[in-house]
Length: 158
Image (cartoon, rainbow, N blue to C red):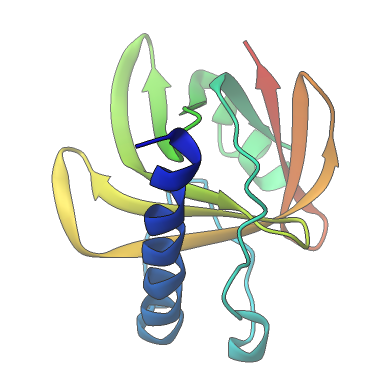
């Protein structure tokens, strides 16, 4: 089976998953510094997959003042992507991984960037948590996403 043919079923599964998670999400969840874009239900429409993918490792920094005041400099946040649509997000303190999340991601046709967190700390979630962002700026080595107005995450390729 070719790479393109294998992506079609995966895209269909992700689309179906989006429909389910958009209506079943919980608003009282801990995000550990990765607060997703807060959206009204009408704005949480299913994402149309652009077919674009990322690969490689990125360091994550936040542009909001709260993270800097809370001592975010003592922790490192990293995201690793592969071209099959999978990611690993880690929070590292003093060289030790203190939180690891795994799942899948989609880059939408309208600049959406959605991480579907399926596993936290080695434990599978009953249903994936969709962390939605808006891509503000993108170059070969850096991606800036907005999680809420005035609060951005900057992903720099390592």
